[in-house]
Amino acid sequence: MSAIILFSAVSLAQLMLAAAMAIASVRMFRGPRAQDRIIGLDTLYINAMLLLVTFGIGTGRVIYFEAALVMGMLGFVATVALAKFLMRGEVIE
Picture 1 (cartoon, rainbow, N blue to C red):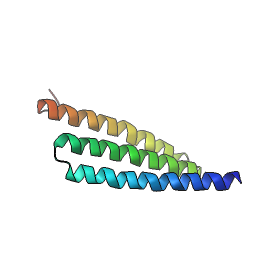
Picture 2: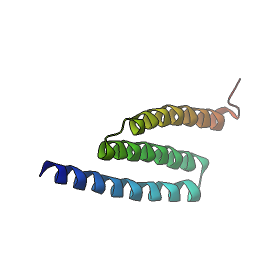
Picture 3: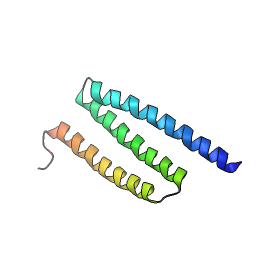
Picture 4: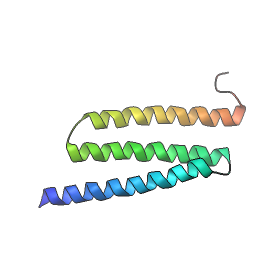
């Protein structure tokens, strides 16, 4: 009984995350300003990271968790670099 509940919860979470990724990609491509596009990209990588975590929970493999960790670190650095570029016009001073 517990395996059925876990499988259905992980499957539902994956469907919801896929829908959230679709909505975030629409915001990223159709955003009226650059700030909206960056927020869409930020939301997209966070949802992708959480989708990897749900794959890891569903399969029981550790590699998905490690990939999600790397994606989270690189996504944070990319968001900070893009925000700095929008504020000052350059990334490296």
